[in-house]
Length: 276
Image 1 (cartoon, rainbow, N blue to C red):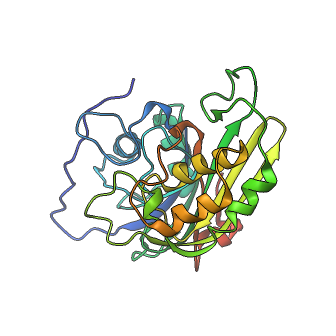
Image 2: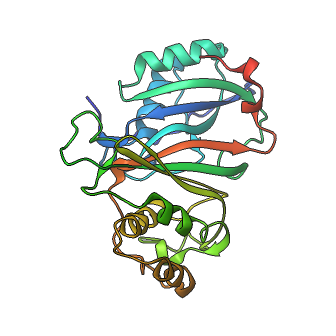
């Protein structure tokens, strides 16, 4: 059962302690959580990870993440980091945490990293995927990981629209719920494309970073383009207008997944160090 009380106390050392900084790659089904970041009265991924770390090591640790995924959003490649005084091996961290974590959260890999490593600031790009199910009937198996749209979509038109996303743009028209902590809404998109796999349509986008609800809002526009309800010119005008929330309602969180976080001198570039 998921607890709703986050333990916010930090461990205090009375003397010199040798510590190691670890980075973990997490996979999780975000359906039952109110996002990654700690919440006062709601279950989160961070809360469960920190609880498992406490059970495994006896330490009360605070973890940092590459991205604060929203409520209901999934991840296959979330990266977190923390400093520990434990002498457990990386394999022991993987198997031990997976023992204590709930079934919808798992550690895929563990790495020893430099003490200065910051999973958010050091990240060069993030890749997200939004999945759409085009089926006349609902699918109990995929419904938790895809947004269902009835009707065929024009994949070529959607991909032509994606070309307007590539490069550096102000994406504020696709943002919602952004606060004062967002200093800039300019982001650089490296790749954006739509592909079809049977009844599933995938929208994949890679950028240096994302603002809140950006991917789900863009995906919503692409669905309208695919259904012939929005033109590419209208899509271009939404980008150019730079008006907060102009793109309209975002698609549900169930279809969104954080696929990968990449780094310039990545520990992930050395697969021989990976423990799975």
